[in-house]
Image (cartoon, rainbow, N blue to C red; front, side, top):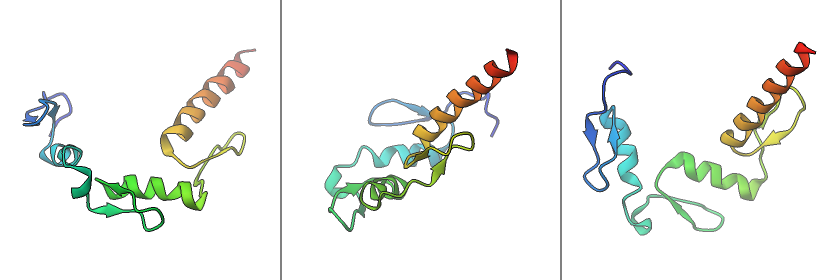
Length: 99
């Protein structure tokens, strides 16, 4: 499926549109009640709709920080925080080259 095609898979709960049926299925997990979520933290019992969300949560218990900045060595437990940090460092490095 080409990315420029308009989203054609519509959520029956909230109306959000998706380009693939798979993406819609992932989204639909969030509409379930938390007691229906099938992934549960073995440490604290909190439940999650998706396995990757539980894996991220587990890092709060293990203190694991697998995402490392290649510029300064700062470590992050969550990919989105690491990605934001990397974007900032890349901009800084590009600005320093201009000087």
